[in-house]
Amino acid sequence: MLKVIELFAGIGAQREALKEAGIEHKIIGISEIDKYAVQAYELLHGPTKNFGDIKQIDSLPLVDMWTYSFPCTDISLAGRMHGFEKGSETHSSLLWEVERLLAVSRQNSTLPKYLIMENVKNLISKRFMDGFNIWLEYLENLGYTNYYKVLNAKDYGIPQNRERVFMISIKDNTKQYTFPTKETLNVKLADFLESNVDEKYYLSEKLIKNFSSMENRNGFVRGERFRVHDENSEYAYTITTRPGSRATDNFILIPEATKKGYAIAYPGDGIYTNRTKSKRGVVQKSMIPTLKTSVHDLGVVLEEDEHIRIRRLTPRECLRLMGWKDERIDLIIERGISNTQLYKMAGNSIVICVMENILLNLNKKNTR
Image 1 (cartoon, rainbow, N blue to C red):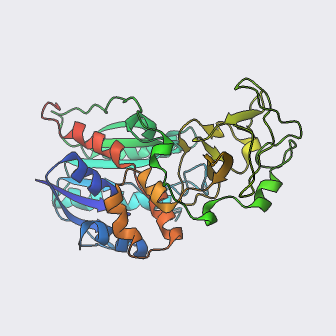
Image 2 (cartoon, rainbow, N blue to C red):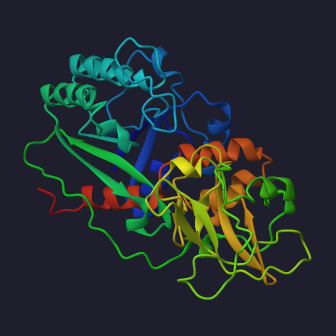
């Protein structure tokens, strides 16, 4: 029986991964302060002891594992980039509260055998590597051996281009850890989409018109001379988005920061819908770009009744793309939690399939 404490628990993706992996476990407690996340956590997993604000926790009981996927807000390229230096009072600096609790556990002889962390890839970038190395050294001084690697959700069964750094720290010199090998992606973004979606998720006619120039309009490319021939054609017919009208093109061009200047998007592709001129990789073939706590800059290209349309993802689709199953998603959607909070929960979650594979490797009897 693996006894676990989830710090920065969110809606319990790590607990869900333990269930999916079939690992016998018991969650001794969590630390989470977002009231909506706590509500969703208990809907998904049942009543659980919440130690509350990590700043207010004096000590933690003896368990086998801590998970501590601390906030990425000040590390992420999409966030504030204020860093996580000790004493900086940024959200990401809550990592050092984990240091404090580990120091207490060391004094009490209650250090866990395992530590698991997930965060954005930028944590190990040149900008933040010095701080990360300080963290690694601290854990090593406690007797942990650290293993970290950037894994992408698309390599573990989810059509989302989501790179995250994972770290396993083991307090046992007789054991070593190997990260799971990549898998072939056998599903597409289309497999995760709902069949009937409210009109409110579709981009408005007004918004589409703002994207109708070949000039730098911060959005989609629409030329006045679009003619469709084949996939090698440079232009397609102008896209028509008005319901009931006939679209005659089969792809769209989206500007991106490359020499070519644009990328081609077909139905079923995930796309960025803003700041595309300054981005690379604005089109993800049969996948969605990295989900965040809001989906306002992401869309999916669809063909409906011979019309090409563009819409945002629904909360259910976002949760599916984080590895949650429909029967689990139903538990929180049917409780009436707002879409804003559901998007936030999905964006802050961890892709369950990736974590499941990590845990299965950790649980292997031949881990040595």
